Length: 395
Image 1 (spheres, one colour):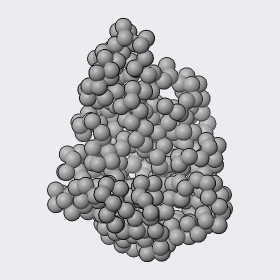
Image 2 (tube, rainbow, N blue to C red):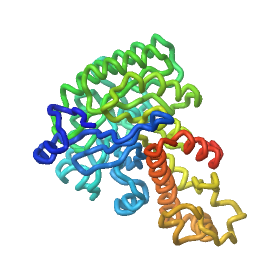
Image 3 (cartoon, rainbow, N blue to C red):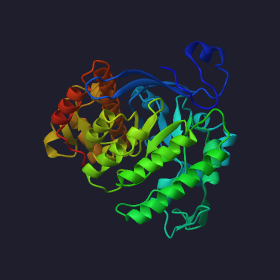
Image 4 (cartoon, rainbow, N blue to C red):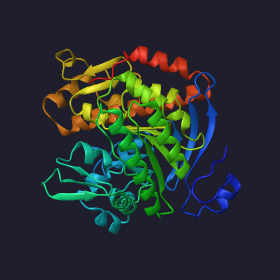
């Protein structure tokens, strides 16, 4: 399948001939699972091809915390996510641009994605004031006054230079009234149009973000209006912000049917096993979350046998691998006893090893999910994996 993105429509032969064109971002769907409708494909980007569905490790400040780019790649990662808001404060978008963009700045040669900073503006900033022009708020580091608009966010993202940029949107809290959400969605759509008009970088894809909370008609309206604007891909936003599990799945269910089948779909901020697998079954291609590295630093591990708290006393003399079914550097070289020792001594090396494992665990799960999709058995894979793991998302 060949899909139109940006200004031209390429087939494979033509794509090779125009490889110097910087708008080389497109999705190739290779197979749709007959059992569930889950999608397997190749996302082509200026910095390489990646298979979907995929999990994207989060490198908020141009680094996946405690890990080198080489270690992240060794885990099988394709796309890494970085944060527009945080990088605009430290070191500043102009400095990153002078370094040659994020890829050169952090020495990562694979695809990258930047969010718009909208979630951080609405979750971290105090005393924010939302107007039609944008958002005025306080810098969470020093209290100074800041202002973000769609145009400013896009300008920062273009300077950062990731392969994929996100539109600046309003991320409302949960729950809110229908009237509040309707006004918010309408503003998000106006901001999306302004951001798209401001986006001029040909080597960077731009995604629209579907908002609408738990209201089916608002999700539908937002998705349909964004599709009319012809973005390069679409994200489902406003999830994983405190809503119940069934509500989150409804948010996805209310959004996906109205998104193009020929463009990437991205469910933002999702990193738990059951949420990811259910999202794949509903036709989502991309996921990201800080969860695997954050919980690893607190000694909580995802394993094929379920959750492991490495700080527990029972592991003090356990000289077996953390997960016998895992092929990561941590599991191939170190025992639970040693990992517990490092954790109890607050050694940085221990946090690094545990982070490597959790990232690799999710990426390996995605590799297995892609195989299951191609073999038309993803529904069985999903149910078996969740049952084996224990259907636990909390850590």
